Length: 371
Image (cartoon, rainbow, N blue to C red):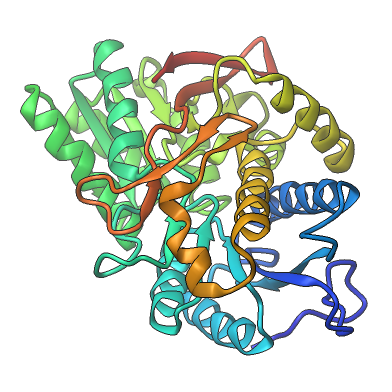
């Protein structure tokens, strides 16, 4: 396991005066580094504002950041390390399978974990009091996406999926939802197919939409290029419900081919005044438009700071506070509840949009559907 180098700006201090939050984020490959950077930018901005306002009852709030590199085993080991360092709580993580490993270990150790951005429904094997989550569960978000597809007239879709608990869960949600409404989901196994073979399968099955349930840049980028370049598939819609087109790296990799690919984004149609202010600060920090992941990072700190001010740094008291949270975040009032089928404390109604990049201006996003 690699610890945070002391030369990094987010390396922890050791003077013992601060209230420390352990942070998990994908900051190197094969993790989605840009997502990790946006998550960290939101967390850091939140901490700066908390400290400018007096910290946690006079003590500075501090992040102890560790890179998960999208590795579940590494994440579990990092949770052990952070627990031993005495952090008051855990925050962060983008990749669902990694967050699941971290959540299971946090539950076993009795370490409160506020998961910022992972959506897998089964974040833990059993119900736990120690874990809460800001992002919507996959079952809700992907059903919203399915509603968008059905509303656009797509009844026969194909999913190009890699082997993963997360992708398998998404496929199952879509398959069940479409079956109940007279639709069909064709599954294409990307462990066995090349991008060219995907095009042949799409033509053979007469699918009207292809959903990318795969990693970026490989194999997502070559699949998109192959589909866009195949004259047989000129009318097919390409979608990416997991949100790959949200980040600038997508547009850089694909150019015009990366536009008009709908994805899920967890933002309201209009930001609150707080959200507008935070957006401006994040834009300056990131030197570009902040993704929804950056807002999730900021909101994570807003919730944890409120809890730590109100209930102190005792881990058990933090976990007991989840049902009492009522914090105005950048995307609405955050409250946690027990949602049927979800084993962690869940923000029940975070905003959900289906958006894409405008073909006329790939740097601009179009809202296609909202819930």
